[in-house]
Length: 237
Image (tube, rainbow, N blue to C red):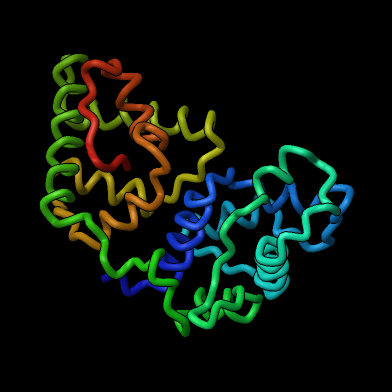
């Protein structure tokens, strides 16, 4: 079970969006639609921060705007939406509901974020399918990829780390992905064998990875080794 309200909030949003097959910027599109013009979003940058569960601390306006969007989905009064594609995406979509059947409002979204309210059962994070065995498999895969980099370029492990770190920074710049010093040090400890991450760290990592090879580390390893040489796994750092 994940004892991390921010991560629970982020996973709930991601699973809700996935259920409706929504792009992350749908709330932004809705707020900017000429027939809606909601002044407080939620904006794409806000949704991105909320879904990362990485220290993002939204203000009250974000939760209220998210509640307004959710009620709009619940009420299905779509005639005001002028963008045809947006209207199709919102048509018959599933709102986030309380046990009473009422849609989440700003207060409920904030309560979920603060850990005062449990996620709806269908989006619950209490039954994560990932296991410590999955986490250990990811660690073994990434360490093997690192070993391959050292062998391919005929360099020592410290030199291989310098090569990988340079590639990670380049990929991060391309993807506009923020790189925290703590994350780099964590990865260095994992690849070197100094740190064996527990399941909760792998769960957080899995949340951050939208898809395989989507993050700077996975992309850097694939570029250095080639897609066919770089082992894929359940996670990517």
